[in-house]
Image 1 (cartoon, one colour):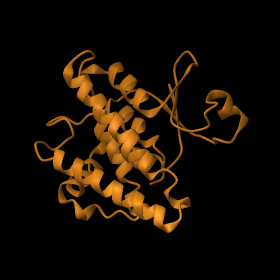
Image 2: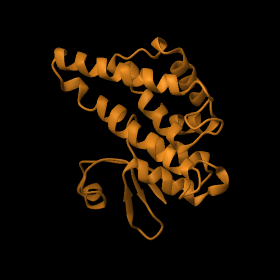
Image 3: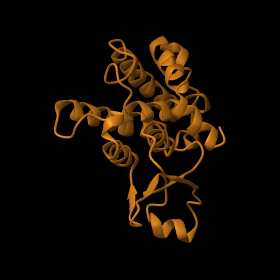
Length: 192
């Protein structure tokens, strides 16, 4: 498998998952404007996981579940068809639509629109921080693919003017995830 990435992008999430699962993969820095990449993913963005048969798989929340299902013994996702799996998908969807997309284009917004986005994100981060109280991870005691994705989105906070210290539980969560060996390896491999 080949995982196409860009440093600082959401492709960090499946990169972390691949390392957590100890799956063999080749990490490929993507030039998303190149004709070769556009042929692989006409959408023009990362992540892209090129499977062994050459087929591309796109969309981060799909890729992380695919990787987790390739190595079920790593317990990075609950079993398909269970309520726990739907809870995982609930978190993945929330992170994708409310947090990830909440940051999208923020740098290009006028100051009043940027402040409105920051206010909205602040409420959403407050919600996430409140949900972290029962366990060290989003689904409780086990690190899952949702944690890899939330961590990835949280890495964008300083550049967007969001100080995680406002939410002690979220800041502690970020630091806990950052200390994981697979996360350190992924960041190092991406030049971070």
